Length: 71
Image 1 (spheres, rainbow, N blue to C red):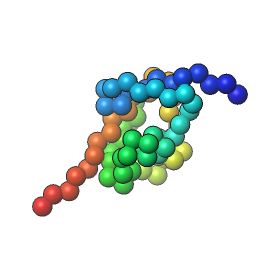
Image 2: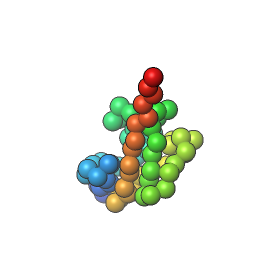
Image 3: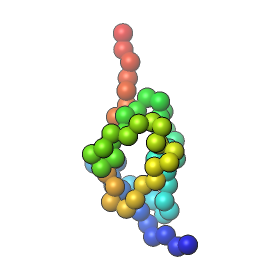
Image 4: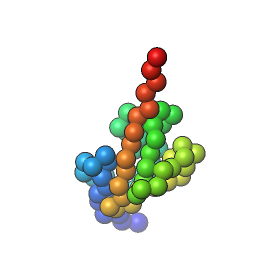
């Protein structure tokens, strides 16, 4: 099966990959801790339980927000 490049936006910045990847793979690749982020995919907030099974498609828009604790 041949796949073309996938172009997505992450926090408004372009990101390209050569094959379909899961959201979890992308978060790991970008060094995000999946337990400390909130992710919105195409304006829909995703629960962490779907990160492994959600694959990114061409023209998807991601917003990744890091949750920081304070004291």
